[in-house]
Image (tube, rainbow, N blue to C red; front, side, top):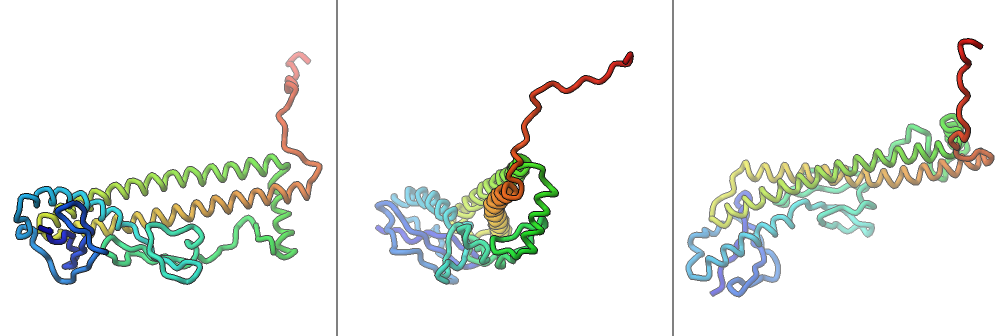
Length: 261
């Protein structure tokens, strides 16, 4: 006998998930049932249902985890795409964060470029802008080694920020997985999901979307900074071809004169 569909209920909506095993038959694709909830107590009516119930518990939790953290954006061809992450090249164009229930919990607008404080400009900069950057380099650094050291410090700082953001994202995903497992148990027991649990899942999804957005921005900034300091180094060598990286002193420093001298 083929057992009925199992799913979970969000705000009187039941999302039906694919099935596996001899006692369950996999539909062609997930089905959405509106304003309809199937009591689970009436569905378990044979000896195989116990095993189906256990299997469905793990399947539902897995499907819930896979369905979280969705992002909706437009690709280079102008098509609307829904995926678990936004490719870095599309972050600046803006996107939407979807909760595990399919609702839009946050809209990230397109990125507006901001002029850099240090006067760095693109390769098509005007003569005045290039002069401004040259003055910045000559005023800030005495040799190429200082340019490289400044770039390494900035990249190390960004790397630490990326590590912290990734750690926060992992914690959010762990909390969301636990909440979705609870939701699966409620659904398999034929009970309606508590509103506080739904709200908690949406909140964690929003936080996860925020950390994902910040992570993408920091990674993009890392690439921009690396390219910027490479340009600084090359430009500085053009302005000062005779200046090489600083070398540590090879002789001992002179001692201070004695009190008797």
